[in-house]
Structures are given as C-alpha cells and as structure tokens.
Image: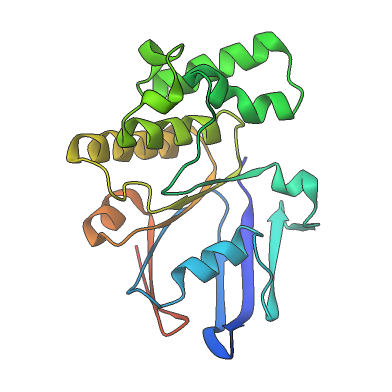
Length: 219
C-alpha cells in the first residue's frame, strides 16, 4: 500500500510566465507531506502535475511500486485520489455519493456497502447516510469528499486545502480524520495548506515553496 512519487526537474509556464522552475523531489511511499508557500509560489501547479491532471513542459513525474516504475495509465489513476476544496456532490443521498467511485470500479453490492459504512463512520456521517447530500453543511460536505476518496482505498491521497472556508469544529474533525488515515493506512499523502500549524500537526514532512521551487524541507 502506498506509492513513491518521483518529480524530476519539473518546469511549467503559463502564457510565458514560468511557474515551476527545475522543481525536483521524491515523495516516499507512505509519507505525509505538507506543502506550504505564498500564493503564486507554484504549489497548486506542482500539485496538479503530481496528481497527473497536467503535464509539465519539461521534466517528468514517475510513480514507483517496490522500486519499479508504473505507467501513467487508467489503472494508475484509479489508485490515486484527490480531495478538492470545492467538492461537487451529486443530487442523491450521502451513501450513494460515497459509493460513486466503487460503483465505477464494478465492486459487488455487499463490498460497496461494507466500505461505504466504514468510511462514513470514520468521517462521522453514519447518521446522515440516507439524507440528501445537497443538504449538508460545507464542513460536512468536505467530510463526505474525504469519505468518497477513502472508500476506494487509494494508495496516494492528494488534499488541496482540506479545511479551507469551513468552521473550526469541522476543521478539528477533518484533521482528526487525516490523522486516523495516517495511523490506519499506508497511503502516501500530499497536502496543500496555508496554515503552518496544520502542516506541523498533519505532515511528517514540511515542504516550503517559493518562486517555483521547493526551498526548504523539514520534519
């Protein structure tokens, strides 16, 4: 469980403006990495390239399993997941939203039910599983996004500001969920945050970006 990600000499520019400049780093299997930096530092661009949403102009991102490189195909994409700050939910129940990725993968009904019940319990939404997802608060919606991501048992989890624009109670709940995932699973976690305290609480490794490069590293 968990994959290593190797970013080598990544460059990326938009409209002639260079956003990433020779950015390299190895994200080891099973580690939790918190990415910090001011707006415009390149965090989001690196995040999208690492998660295979975009291609670099130069350089490469390679995924490794037990020292062997994995092709960036559909099978690999199904082993990674993203949780974005503005999560889209379907106009159906909480349960069916959480089950979406499992149904796409063709799992049996009993397996889907067991996994969804497990993750809804983990994020504290068990009592709301048959309620409409569109009726959830913003904090509950973000927790549903975590449940939907965790249900597929991902080997890499990308979290883009997982507590942005939500109330303090749900921030605490979501941080506890992430800590639980770290303790119970072996997934590689890469998280963008603007909160240095949160980075310290949740990350095993802190990476500070500035001017398109990783400038500082800490544990």
